Length: 327
Image (cartoon, rainbow, N blue to C red; front, side, top):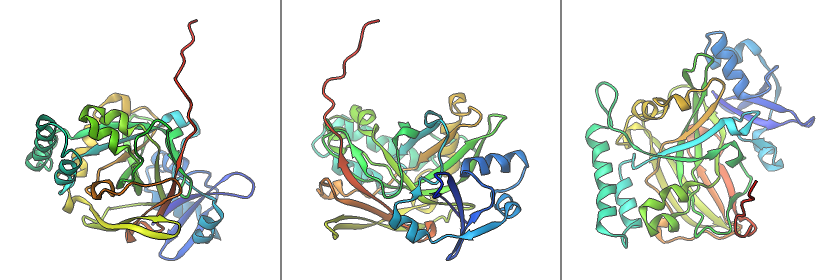
């Protein structure tokens, strides 16, 4: 089952459930988050909760995308309580991609990346948890989520704005503080790779950028071998395209290990919060010396996730030097 959210004509949110080519509104559902919290409260699965609500009006998701009424597939009424985070160097091939990015960096930086990758190969899929910690980063909150079709806005001071095609885990935190996985979604973990390349310690700065997820959430088990395509279109023409691989068969860490090392922090187990955690990639247009330009459209798709995720690149206005007022 796939779940998505659309903007209804009255301004409210409609939750759409899809099996195969048939998509319809979930009766009485006002958001995917509320549906997930209801499932927790009633000790049901999401599929059981959707079945209990029943399906109503049919929805043409392709038409909704063309109208620009697709929303991010999960949100929070207070965007500060939606957390965007991620892990890197988790995919087979990640080290070679990162090494190419850091070809002009000093040897210590390159060695650190390779060391982290090898740690994952050796201890990222333990027989019993916990395994080795992954690279981890904070990306932002709900204010940084771009809806499918909406621009990914790069700040004026950025040196680059490039795509990262990834799988994201979507989670809600139950009333008891325990995380529950809603499902999985495509994600564009948009980043500034030029800034990161200056010095690996700039990674934290390079990740403070918007991200887009969806349009649909895959509910249930994730296939172990995910194969998709990442491309960039310029004026309608594909200027770069490459397959990307994900799923545990193509990773150096298990999802269970990556989830443990995120949710082991009580900070991330606050009841009612939403988490979108991106699990890394080994495919970047930047590694192929491609520089995206304003108006270019990033396109990420994989058959298991329904509709492709598309977002144009835009550049924010120059806001000048940040000024702090003394109180």
